[in-house]
Length: 566
Image (tube, rainbow, N blue to C red):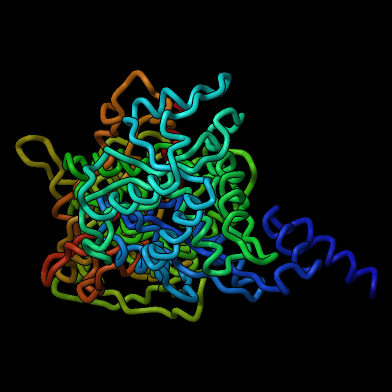
């Protein structure tokens, strides 16, 4: 029994990601009194995207798994780009993903404490006001292979720096005229130690503090101290912050008055093929109206994925599959689509929708007669039951489910061939009607009344099954077929091209005049369905009474790779 328990424990250990291994070791050693506290610290200057979802899952997931708390902290130290609109959207996205924060904090909650700490550094001779231009400071910091040179203001008197620092916050100092720099080591091999800027002047009102402050802390100065003020134990960041960690620790060492220290750990970012994650580029797509907004279903934003019909469960499943490592890479977007498809397969109701309709007339079916066929709502979940679907003499079918002259392995409707109408009868095609342009307007067939689904004769095998919608019991819909936003796997790698030139011109195809079964008239925005034989769809927020709009979430299978390999 003990051996079995030990093997289970060993297996669980193997399945832990490296952050969980660190957390469990800290718990075993009794660090921080056995306390686990994380935080998710977004800047409210845009909408969250799938990359942020990975950080959300680890920040909240670690706290959840080990009985800790994860707080939400808005890193609102730059009023130029921040807005309450983004605060609201971030909170909505976190809850949609299935997480709940312990407390809500803002970096601006600590502006006075950060200011006091900056004053402390000046008094200790560890910070000074610099009046050089940004260009001069950049040149004076040297290169990774050459040490920097001291600022001419590096040794200015403490009282003078104190006076100028107060003037930076009084409103009398123009933006860009002065900065406060930490005095550390201009010869350090770590460029971030070469007297980093910790305060700058901004005259734009803050979304929470108004015009109280004119001097604002930089991210590297505010971030670690905010962790410290809040009691964070494990500060989880992406890999680009590895080089910032020594500075993170240095600031906290100057501030701390006890043995407690938050510790920063870094994991790989989430990058996806056929998309971009840069906030600047995403903003450009929105501002230049290359997409319809932040919630465009082609965008990698969480609000866009929600509108497209992605499920939070599917996104979390995808993030679990790709895991957390210490090296960056790019993930195939088909893995995300597969995870969403798996989740929708288990939960989505099966319905009939015809995207390119042509009328099928059953010439031997009684005119005016209507039957109810039993349709299983989801074969993966018996608890979802079934529903009645109306059947009549005239049906809508997909145009490509009929060919007048078909190749040998075409098993759908063609003269003389039999198919099963799903949930209904076997029918034999007898011909078609065309208009003056030679386009098929009606397809004709005869039904076999002994082959109704559920009857003994219904077991007769035919090679093809097609879906349908009863003409008098259908409703019109607009269907939006979404695909990859870019034509190339890694748009960011195409340095010689403007990324906008790489946009996929067929990332959105809008189909009007589609026909769906009348059951869907009552469907509400974000309701999800599988259109049989076509894909997974959800109701778009553009839908109104009498006008249904559906978004394709994902196709039934990944057809993109087949196209790219052909």
